[in-house]
Image 1 (cartoon, rainbow, N blue to C red):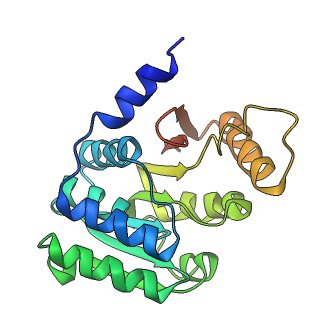
Image 2: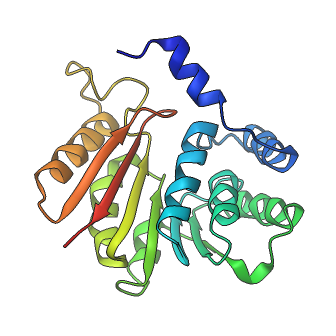
Image 3: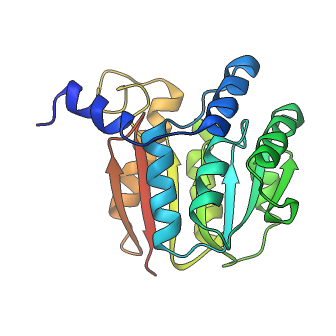
Length: 208
């Protein structure tokens, strides 16, 4: 098994530039926890591999994950949803610092499920979900509808601070994530893997 030192090495392997550092600093100021460098690099790799042109994201934060995705998929347009317009103001400024054209991203302030329900079926190559953990099952329902066959659906915090693997942990967030992982495993129209990057990334391909 991989030990803690090797996991740390892998997590620190991706290099982040000054703009990503700025996005992380802003995240600290407003009190959000963005995806780690390992998870961001994994998202970027997946977005590039699938040739993403349309991406939907739940949980804009200050733009860390969005920046990883948009840089890796130069033809992609990101639709990103967050309850906090102030967080999205930071993300917009970060994207500007990175030189991303305004037409490459659409930031929508609102409740995730409300906004997702208004988006077009089968219109997205990649969905990245990092919002309310208790709503993860409902996010999956919407993401399956939104993502095209062959597209990808990714959930952050799939290991939830090492709680998911511990059966004694039964809080609502841990239970919701554990149920999501089990549900995906039993669905023959989905192909999935749990990756031990950051706080865990559940990567799903829609095959049916």
